[in-house]
Length: 294
Ligand SMILES: [Mn+2]
Image 1: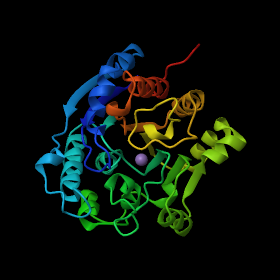
Image 2: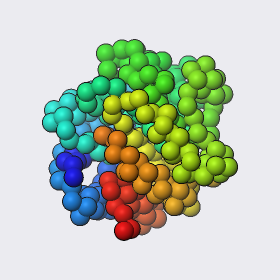
Image 3: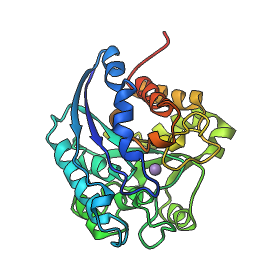
Image 4: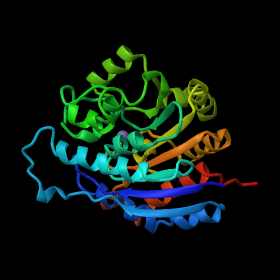
C-alpha cells in the first residue's frame, strides 16, 4: 500500500473552453479520497495550487495566458518537490497544461517514463498550434520544443526523452503534430491500433516500450474516453476508449507495479451530466491503484 498525495491545479487558462478549472472539485466530490482509502492506501489531500482566473488577466498576450500558466506550473513543481520521495502524487487538473508542472515536479530517482493517455497528441508548439491554446502543447514542451518561458519550468531543454514516452488512445492530430511524431519517432498507439489488436496487447506493448525506465508517470486526459462514457471533458472527440478498455488499461498498469505518479485532467463539469465523468475517472483511479474483482 502506498501513500498517495492529492494535489489540485484548478486551471483552465490553457483550454479554449471554460470549466476545467472545476475539475479538482468534481473529482473530490466524486469520492476520490474515500475510494482510494478503501483500497488500503494512505491518502493525503494537499489542497489546490493558487491559479489566477482569466477574468483577472490580460487576454492579449500570445500564446494566451502563457505567463500565468508557466507560473502555475512552477508552483506545482515546488509543491510536488516538497513531498517525501516515496509518495505517489495524484495531480488533479485543470487543463492538460498542468502536466508540465506535474511531470517536472516528479522527483523519483532515475529515468521517468510517461504514458500519455489522450485523444490528442498535445504536441503543438506556439508556432504550429491552430488554436493557440496551451493545453494542446504540453507534450511538445516536455520533449524540449516550444516557448522558453514554459521550458524554464524544468530549467530548459527536454524534461523527458522521446523514447521514454508512449501516447495511447490518440485519434485527433494536427498536421504539425503528425510531423512531430514522425520526426521524433514517437511511440504512438492510436484508437485504430486498439481496435485492431485489443487493449490488452497494446497496453502490454506500451509497458514493454517503457521497460527501461525507473519511474512511470501516467497522464490521463479524460478526453481519451469515449464521449458516451465521459461527456464532461475539455475537448470531446468521438471514437474513444470504452469503459472496459480503459479499465483494462488501468488494471494492466496496476499489475505492472511501475506507476509512481498520475495526472487526472480535463474534466469539465460544465459539460457533464450529474458529475458522471468525474465518477468514471475516479473508477479508473481505483483500478489503477489496485481495485480487483477477485
Ligand atoms: Mn490532453
